Amino acid sequence: MALLDVRELWVSYGGVRALKGVSLAVEEREVVAVVGPNGSGKTTLLRATAGITPHQRGSICFASRELTGLPAYRRARLGLIYTPERARVAPELTVLENLRVGALLLRDAQKARATLEEVFALFPCLAQKKHYPAGVLSGGEKQMLLIGRALMAQPRMLLLDEPFFGLSTGMKQVLSQVIRTLPQKGVTVLFSEHDLKAATSLAGRIYGFCQGRIIFAGSSAEFLRSNAAQRIYA
Image (cartoon, rainbow, N blue to C red; front, side, top):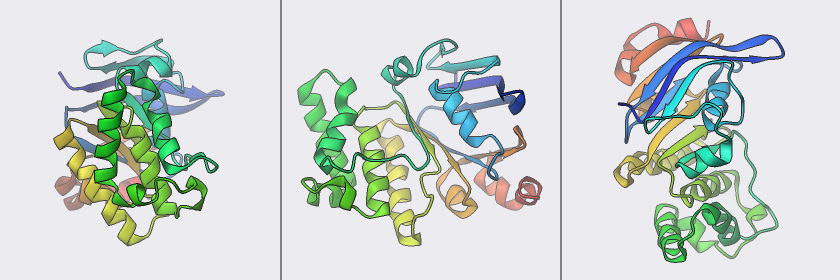
């Protein structure tokens, strides 16, 4: 069974259907992207999966456990960690203090220290600036800090909402390389993205969203060969 199994998910905001019977699956140690224009349902899917936005119909199973009715903090304890689009660091705290906030779910201090070293190995610039206030970091460094903070919780699965938003081409490449290594460390990744080049170069599989429905599901290579992009962004 897939690590994440979403079936016939319906979500409404004030009578407006944001998701209309969405089904998808993500296998353990995969990197999967959800693409589509703004308002297509990408963020709603991630928020519903994380337990932030309630769904009206359908099911969400994670690690063979039905999540319906389970609050966000309990989903996080199961290893399902969500990083919102344009999330904020705590600017007055140091880089190190921000990362330690991510480890609050860990009750083993030794494990937290080991995880911190792993995060610093992934993001050397954070190690170099660990005593700097997070507010002085560049936009790309703040995004690294956000992902590093999420990794401090030792997730089994990361839900990343538009992780490349506003980043330079060089910073996108750096971040992509880090995300590619995560499955080797036992972390599965589901991310939403508007940038098709970034999504197809990183993800093994793509789900294409349009008006709250999935209109494409397949490999990145199949996506690039198809006319799915034209249909999704028409």
